[in-house]
Image (cartoon, rainbow, N blue to C red; front, side, top):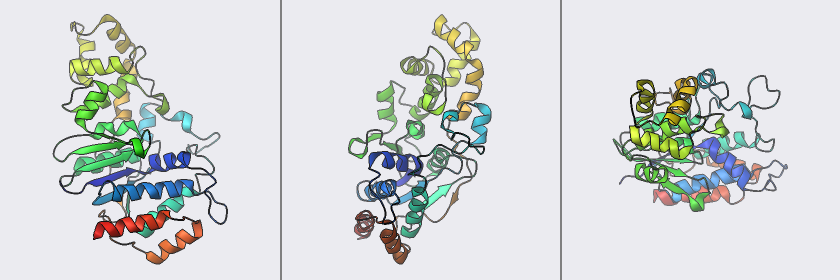
Length: 315
């Protein structure tokens, strides 16, 4: 099998790094760099452990896209910073200055970044995965929402889920997703998205259908084959596979169900803006700048480890 195209869910990964490593990791000027170092270490693992041939760090051009908020105003509403008139996300003060440093490091090393105006990183990942017709794809994330992109054809797409950290990472494909949630293996990604609509997700402001939890949602999707088929059965009124209790719950949630797929389903047709080609570089794009960034921000052994991984991969 050829080396994979690795799509990194950048925000998910630098948030995880920030909370996993102590803020006592600082630059000479006192700026925290725990997220920077943790993120660089993740890129190193992507190159060294996952054998990536191509890498794209996928960014949020809009963490709370207007088309999703228009469909469901509660979407991520609880994460909006207090008093933020522009809808800015609540981000820890110690993380905010680290994001530009991460982007500077990626640029100097030569790792591609991609975003799409009006879309989240999930949509960038969904679009790049959907259109990849050459190499297998691995998505690196701590976000379950991206389980929906797994597939077998035309090229396999897997999610390396870091919910419990790199040491306990789970590689999720259609078979693993089906087994984990009792979903049909065929078109497991789409089935997961349908289950997620019914189940909801409080962390994203998705209420779900009252009275239908994860197991019931998975059972409904499995029995009927898709969310669309479940909703068709609600309107049919004659399908005996649908219990009175479930029919009532779904009927009461019809307004939510009319808009939730727009919020849950990742886009596969976003207009991607990518800063450079995605092959993993054999050497840093700008060695002098890499050295300057390492010295200025006190990045210790993190950058040398990444550069060593790049060099080893090229030999």
